[in-house]
Image (cartoon, rainbow, N blue to C red):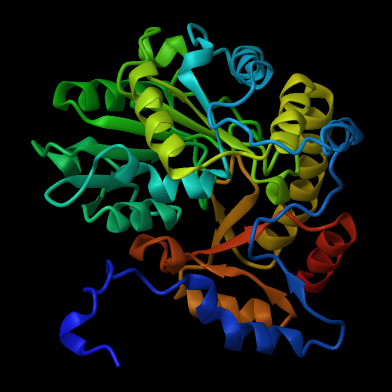
Length: 370
């Protein structure tokens, strides 16, 4: 028996996995006579486009190891898609890198960039939980802030921003983005923009941190994180990438090669097909737009205020009460939603309602709210 004195020290103290706390409210919602309507996790339900599936199947017989850096065709597709879809110019193929899903990247990014004990990582006050987890896994401290005034003269090592936001759907304007870029550069901080919802804009315009209107064409110190889980329904493929500062991407590549973090080759080929085809992405966007047009008025008519939510796959709803009470109200109607406290204390009076359900399920939810 291994004695207590010889055991390794415990790892970083991580928060409770939020979805594990929903068991009771899920059970409550499941007792509805017409069954459970789950609008919590933003997992795609629509089929993968044939052009992507065909590309995956065509490469499925390859037996050898893939490369961490990705195929030349995939790297070129990343660069050209960012230019074509989001106006990002000045990127080269050595400034992009495929990743095995963006959650994996975000969770490992601070450590892979050398962030650790004694360093500070800044995340939004209401934020995707993995930003905090990635910092804690690296041994860094975490500061939550939405404005530069809150940060004062501090000098963080790394800073996450998220526009459009998960969970709120808020979009950061060009003036805000430019100020954040300048602030980070003055302090030598790495600025990481999670842009996984950039292709799902319902109102106004959202810009990439790599857009020349934001960064003046200089990508130094900047990284943009992109996912194909939402716009191409590739959550099961684990298909994402990071782009930006060539030197930072090179550092990530070196670490990830040593760690054996390689996207499977069939997925690389499928991802290339997805990035080269805009039609399926645009069609999927319109599907979500229609679901939003059904669910948002129903939520508002039921007495809730929908804040932000001008982009992304969620409605950020409140009636100015504790979020767990709101979750129970929805559960009594057989609808499961995510309490806003999952994303930080500032979310304590909101719930996140996902649009990632079938048309029939969204219609059923709207009917129950009526």
